[in-house]
Image (cartoon, rainbow, N blue to C red; front, side):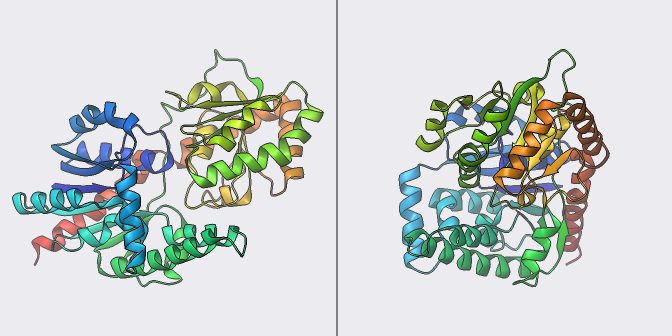
Length: 397
């Protein structure tokens, strides 16, 4: 097939939630079809990956997305009653690239990654499959609820949630199919929308890249991994470091906590001044931390979809202590311990640090769970089927 892939952020390197999924989708499809990619570059550090991404596809158009113009577009969009998200990721240059691609190539189907480009994709008459991944409107609504009643952010986030919900409802009703990554997202979208066709395609894990290293000894190390410019991740480590970590250090003085992820803000960087805490910033590979750690943590208060950080740690044979919100998208998971409060988090982490055989057994069980249920190839075959069906629907017209 000839496919057009619209993606709101360059799908490489696979080092954060959305880019992990978009990379594997692109890799899978490009190995089987002729794929043209239109995406944005919103992080200057990713310029060095343009050649890698371009080599994966037939043709790649990568649009620069400077932060200041994007912010101005978003504010203008809010002022005229539309969502900030759509305006942020869809500059005029992106729209022009899309129009040129549609004018010069007869595509069989369009795959849209996330909701930001859904309206644009549906304007061209080519059958579209929308991968919302998770329901963005629910995320913004949850952010609003987490703010103080008098905070301006509460008002802004609530507006964005409502406008994204309207966008998701309209586009999912018109697209050939809409895809999400977890059952909770299916239920969230159906609560306010009537999608024409709604499918569940969960995330997978690259079990060759993420695997235990028998040559590496486990240490009394606790790891959190994730992009630190993502609000939910930053809030999670700040809460854990403040509320749970002192309890852990009091009982296991040799314990260390590594926060591994790109672009930590000032508040997260300041955590490195506390005893036993390391803030790494961007790393080339997160696996060495996961392979050395006795336990990984995912203390998220706001979590949508499937948490790749949990699956990756389990694939490395590292048990995970996580809040219920972080585990909700991975039903039936093994190798995990659910802990809702700081006291429960501390107790679970201390038990695993103090009992290496227990941690090893739990980690091995988590690795087995990922191998059984969560490889990318097993997940993405359904996405390929949906795109073929969409293409057939156009051929039949």
